[in-house]
Length: 73
Image (cartoon, rainbow, N blue to C red; front, side, top):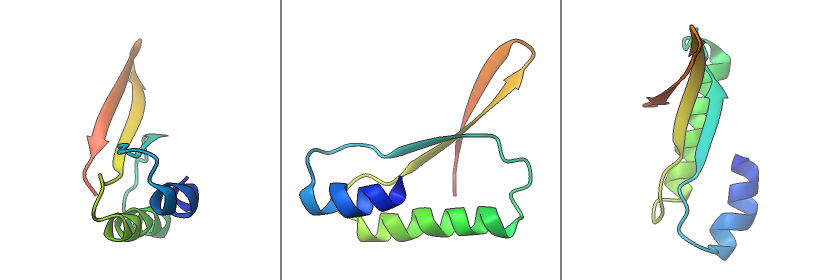
C-alpha cells in the first residue's frame, strides 16, 4: 500500500486523501517487524510532508464488539 502511494499518489496527487491502514491488533509492539512498519510509515510521511500523514488503526474483538484503536507511531 505504501509503495502504491509513493508510486501513484504522490507523483499524481489526484486529491487530498487521508491514507489509512487498518490492521488486526499487534500485541507485541517491541518486535523488529513493528519497528520496520513504523519506519516505513515515517519515511512515507516525510516524503509526503505537504499532504496528510498515514493514519494507523488496529482492531480487535472484545466479547461481541469490534474495537478500533488509532495507534500513534
